[in-house]
Length: 241
Image 1 (cartoon, rainbow, N blue to C red):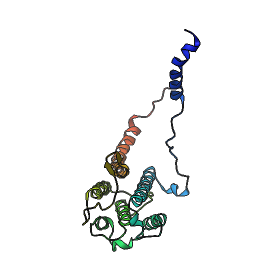
Image 2 (cartoon, rainbow, N blue to C red):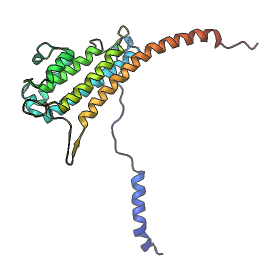
Image 3 (cartoon, one colour):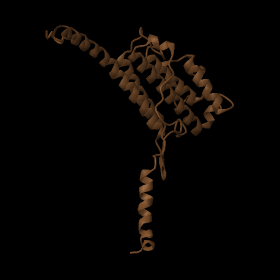
Image 4 (cartoon, rainbow, N blue to C red):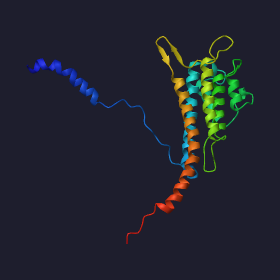
């Protein structure tokens, strides 16, 4: 068979090999935070708790942005632009300032109000602020953790269940007119958008992991103490001369 006849048969295989050899599309990379002198006052567990808290807040900010995009009438109750509304909510959370429309309520009471069918204010802002406050309260009212800080595993576990409940209420509850409280996930026809559910799932997963880690940390401390005692007596090298 001549080269001219072989060429059409070889071209698909060459294209396939080239595709396999090409580099995969980039999907981001893990980046550590810049070193800070504040870390000198943190144990490994403190650092993990701080990173988990920051990740949960960033997830809430992402949900806020997505909810505002799907429900533009809400941010117009708070600011003249969506970006300005998002900044106001962020500042209130980071500075631990109460959101005015929540009537002084905090924690789960604020979440209940934000998800009430009769709530008339900026529901996105109220819901995100209340959920963030609940998570921070579960962490002992702290966003950053140091050697003197401790975490209550049961409070973290309860916070995870609260987020699950809030996600379910947001997806299922209707207002007096029969419309969803807020437009979020969408499933129908050719459209399938579950990005809200996935982001809520990330928050729940981190909280559950921190709850288990907090319990495990104290258990492992006891085991390490016993190991050190045993090691002092039985795990020493013996002289050979």
